[in-house]
Length: 260
Ligand code: IPD
Image (cartoon, rainbow, N blue to C red):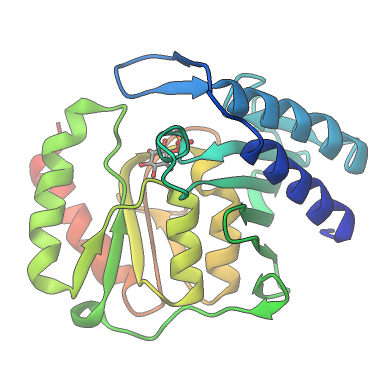
């Protein structure tokens, strides 16, 4: 399904993203949740150009244009994952394009425009960074670097996030908080970290990268049990094949005793 035409659209979207200076921003809801004019422009660009490549597919994007997920092909886009990093010039944001069929991701592309890397995967075909195959690591929990998201738009989850970090620090090598879930997941897929969790993560943040992690030999799911779903936000966890279950179990234990 993914071919050079998709990668070309993604590269052009990346050029558009990096072309902005003196960004105008507006707040969506909450003090930490805002959108820049670049998020909106990149989403419109992707919607139009991807529709030309997959005319039968529905479109679901972070910045409006949301649709109800059906069994049909659906393109799920985060035009800029890591908007805060982008707005603050931290060079750690990505463009994320996932494709679902029967409500499950079947293909995903994540562009890191700063490093000119396209992470991509299709179900059953392996995972790649540009042309090179990528694989998760085989590190166990005690050697693991675990990425996490802080659910910045859900302040009632702050304490649970803090408890999770405190519980994981003594059981792992260390934790990381980058500000882009899509890039965190690609790090897991490349074997330079071993897991990611976030207590409330939206489908456009993890859809594309989930295929990449799974095709690289890792696992993704809902912390409280079962597979990830893509029609609403979930407590999300991913990991290499060794760390996934212990990470999920530890987090689920915290959920049972401490959820708000
Ligand atoms: C955010 C990033 C961040 C995660 C947030 C997401 P956005 O994406 O992925 O790492 O912690 O929950 O919302 O809002 O910048 O597209």
